Image (tube, rainbow, N blue to C red; front, side):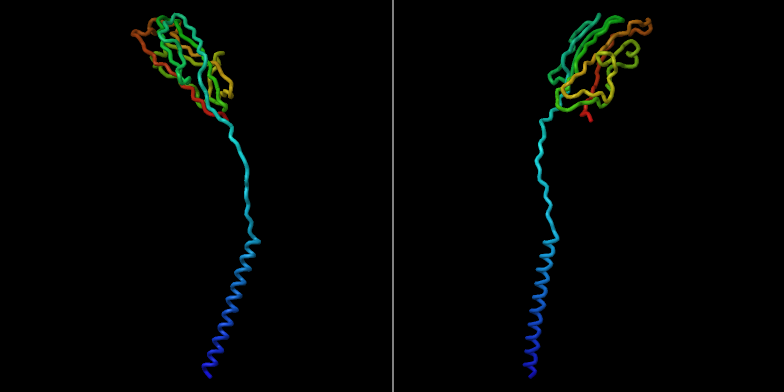
Length: 190
């Protein structure tokens, strides 16, 4: 009888295990269905375009003027249009060399001056008898933050001269070489 009792207990255990497995299976299905009904997928779709963008701030149209200056090489815009070179000799007080040029914004982005212009090439000793300036053609100073809108231009004037009213002690006693330069750094305007 013991074998029969054991067999009945085992059969009952199998039936009970099947019930547990069925309950677990049904719970898993219920959880999956519940999750599926409580979840959502969000999607965003769109189209965008980017116009042709071009950065092009450069020099155009050099017009020069001189008085009692020997022009060795006139002010010339170099091939990349962002550099101008010239070579002149000033020989007497009051002699000067000046030229005007336009800074053109041929790009599609407004440009602004990132820093004040940096003038180089005049030592403190040479500054006593030399005047070197870069301004707008109307004489107004060029300042940080000045904007040149896309398609527009601004005329500037470069002047190097020997001061007119010097006394004998201020005159240079040897030939002087000036390696003049000006940096105008433009960036994208806000």
